[in-house]
Length: 299
Image 1 (cartoon, rainbow, N blue to C red):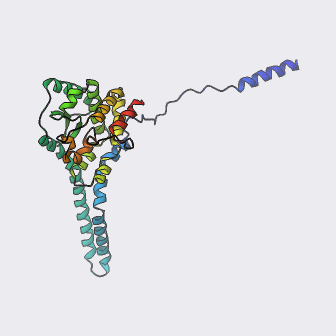
Image 2: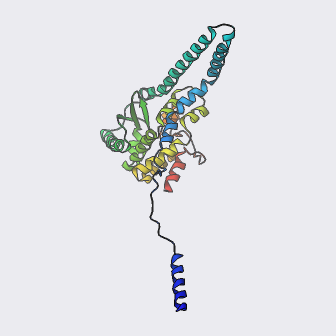
Image 3: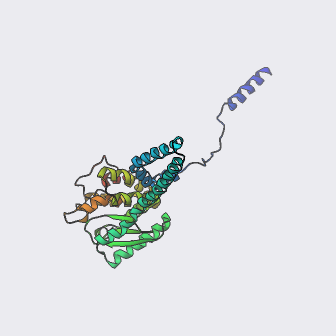
């Protein structure tokens, strides 16, 4: 009897050592990396304001010091603190207005592009573009987008602020030479920039008188790469977008193309192919079309 009891005890202990079943629990805080987070959108939407604050920092420091000096002058003259407070309030009211004006500067870019380009494409091209745009604007939750096909031998596209609405520009060569699934990838990329909150900072970088490095910093280096990720996840077919990027990388613009002009060099950050005037690929640059295509090939 004792032997049987010991044997039963050993069997029970062995069973106790087996791993216990744990029911899977979903993490309520998990978010797909291919969906823009609130923090990411917030950072992009406030990039222009932060840029403007940095440019006005010397003035802000000067007014702050002067206001504090006036407030401290109460020992000498009673009314000086009142003047100091009034000066500070007046300056920060004007600063707030200046920040709003900065953000609105990019809203003129759509009209400027309409003045540069002429209408192009066929009625079939326009129908294809409108069909793709209608479907994808519903997917991305964007309203009020006007479509324009512009006469140009280069491959490119852009979604641009135009007052309170948006304008989609696609070149006639892109509409002629790209497959429908590739056009879908290009349009999705442009709409992904809107979802990421990039359009304002890119448009303002295109219209301000800045150095190339300052434009790149304001527009957001690597933002095109990130928009590819968001677009590919939304349309669930990254190869169409990758093929479009590769066609852009293999296309050479001639000297008469808009994408070889000073205007393009200024406006480049709003375009699908940011470096359309680059003779060779730079695989160290996240915004290079060849690198972006290679990254999508890995999906």
